[in-house]
Length: 248
Image (cartoon, rainbow, N blue to C red):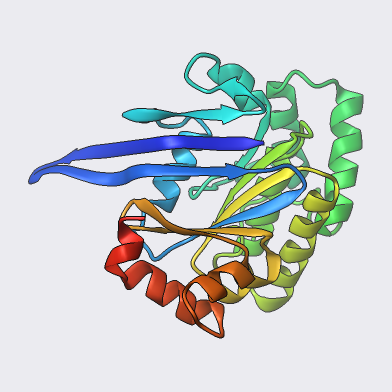
């Protein structure tokens, strides 16, 4: 389980401080997919970076499986599998070698790495690319490789920043099926997106973020009911645009 407690984060710019995140607070439970939904610049990626310890919050705290990220960041990182917004792969290595390298960083044995690589390759349909050098990979192939290496150590908690961004239709469908498989295995899955259909189809719970704060949270049905709309897109527009929502 991953919990964000009153997260705040500001950045210095030439014109002064920019408040990227202002009191984000939510809980992502095991065996569920929790979606962070918001427009570009809403604070989703900054929030995720604080969750996986790349950034420290100015205020608030992050807990992963009850472990405080500030006091024990190494243990939190071991409990997480992360697909960040920047997901380059080592171009001179094959997909298999990319995955193996990350397994070695996690202290895994060769037999453990081989078993996990086989399982992830099957789940992500990587058989044809596993032993190819990653230079020249399509975006979908790079994303699959990046996800496999992020999950090689078999983490119980998974954070994915816009995992289907730029993918074609068939690869997107395969990625959605993979996310559902992670949920069915009892893992805690958080992913960010600005694609309404994707969030509605996949998420057990949706957290809407706008202007650095949570403006609404619940199931798709609950959000539609809260804002009196028949579809999630209209509920989303009302949530991010209403003055009441921005101060909820």
